[in-house]
Image (cartoon, rainbow, N blue to C red; front, side):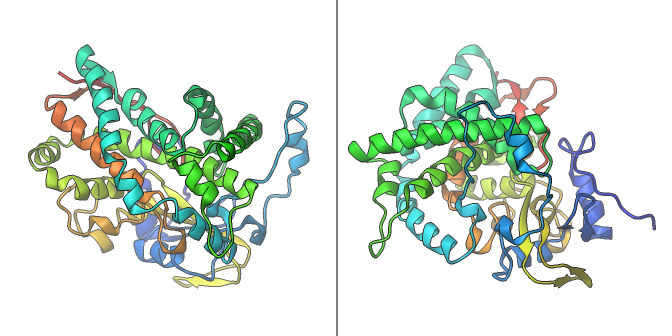
Length: 404
């Protein structure tokens, strides 16, 4: 058999990655990636690696490309500063354990569920505007603004800052892809610098003016006298905007598109609101808003007879695992909102790095998708959707719909 070449940057991959992932899953489930490292495609391997405490997420434990950062940073304008971004996503225990414990104190299930009435009101306001016009861009008018506005309100961020923060977070989020053009890297550095300065000012103001909001709760989060440093606090707030926003955009936008492509599933959801929870889990499995997550081998590790050397990146292809027929059966490539095992998807990762924002993303997805479909039973997609072209955070940039 000819050696397989896995290229997620090839034309058409964003629109339909599933045929490529199925080929890798069947013929080369542990694959040496051309740019370095290894990629895993089967559910059992992905799940095991995500939960393996011997693996790392800290880039300091990997052999990185030695192309000097100073050459790129020289392109920043005078006064811009680069400071390493250290969110929970890139920390190993014990630092990860400590920080997650502090952040989770302000991110409880009760806190998230209390947001439901406000999220419903936000969604209804967007749907009212769509109904008045008879048409809509689902991404631009619902999927994109909803999670951003929810995060901003949760944190108690000033209203006037939203558009600027959107621009900065949009530039930074591209760094979650493994390959970037130099100008995209420079734009991300600049945006990170500006966002850091802005958040420092907001946090300083919030310390002096505490309120009943998430940012105040994060500032006051304490355990045994331990609190987050100013930089730790700022980095976790940045993470909410950078990673927490984009993934939910993709869930809502791509989720609505898939439901409209599967009218029998949409009709079932409209008829039975009790299916909302399971439907969002199935959409998370089916569309995989985050396609891939990575770990680093601290020591040599063997997977399916392949030895992965120490200090090597391991890509766990969540999207492939979520469509693995060995886990989800012969209908793994079909959308079934009644699928009993849908909640076993790995779209939020697994193990100690399981996404802290999973409950919020699910809630927003349940409200936005369910209410959209029930408000507009005759909604139809106009033309072809526009994809964002990203390898990792796969989603739509535009979805034009006639809401009837």
